[in-house]
Image 1 (tube, rainbow, N blue to C red):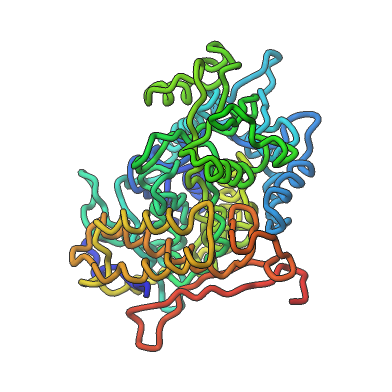
Image 2 (image 1 turned 90 degrees about the horizontal axis):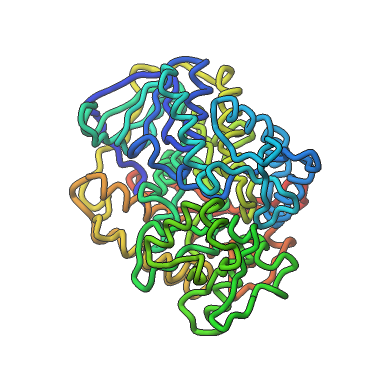
Length: 552
């Protein structure tokens, strides 16, 4: 059972705006900057403005910027990586609007690395058959993009609340989004639980990687937006497709939390994956070897670890030399050396770790969810671009393109917000999970719903997750909210993973190793449905929707 309504009915403070944007990564910042043309905008972020996943993006941003590249080629590579589940119309919007979106970033002051002739330096990453990845600072692309957008935000007139956890959606009498409730933790701001009433709500809350024990995601990535959307009655889709980055620095047994990512660009520049005997085990497994799509490489590493009994594999870039490491990958080099590994003289120990959610809150091509007035963009959203497996470096581009598309649609969608919007009942004992259960959620998901999945393990995960609400917290603090959101999202991931009895993209079922377009060529849509017992509790229901144009 999943709690359906967790918000205080009489907030201690109230604010009003036209558009409230939740999240300050690339999607949230672009949405806030673009939406300011349509009224007053309030940007809410869970920690500091630059604490989300965008600043950690090393690999770059993909766009057909080279003279010998085209949007159609970018589209083809994206569709191949998505293994039959991409929405081609959404992908076409991404790749055709992407180059101008990147140029707009440059106009804002984002400084991308340049080749000797002055053009943007482009490289390859896994799944791309052209050099179309733009970088900044070698391997600090996200940090540079975030810097440029935050500089633009500074004098934009967009209001900001930092250190605020979004709780639940407010709705009007017609079921339209009318704002959100927040728990504000910062000093010098409205404190405690309050309400922001708004004419539109944009979710840009980022990922859900903290649902697993090992992840590249920052501590704030606890799936808050997906959990809120589910409780609000919105549809989520493709949650079974959690992408595991194949090469994350292995910190030894027992390591937890955010772990350093070894960018795909390192393999793009020629680093080799080897086992402890020195064999390049990806050769022969895929025509692109180390540059195969991420799910293929993650599976290859996991399989080789099983075959050899090793706790990690090795990424060998010793042949780069010190000068290239220092110029091309300074951030990665520093992170490795911080943990006692010198890539110049020794291979890097790597393992797969939870990295990106290809699924999320279901949207149309302009970010609209199934709840009127509620929009989503960035990693929290499922636009249909990624399908079963995100193509490398498409995520930053998706945030740019679809945040701008929300702003395009907004003028025709905005509605007045009544003074009295419906808030959900106050949480009581037995509703929010005890914060100590966070480790239990992560252990269950890592053990049963990680890179390798099977019916028995997923059934065990469902049972163990269902048993956790028995130990609930009577104090509705931020930590309790976060673990409750993680539990909600974990339960939804497991429900979808159990239902999809095939292997496709980043979803690998050992008991169903083959892809089946005939049975599973469509999407799984998950909702929270109220039980017959009343409105206080709900159950997850996952339904299969055939692909567009089929007769199923």
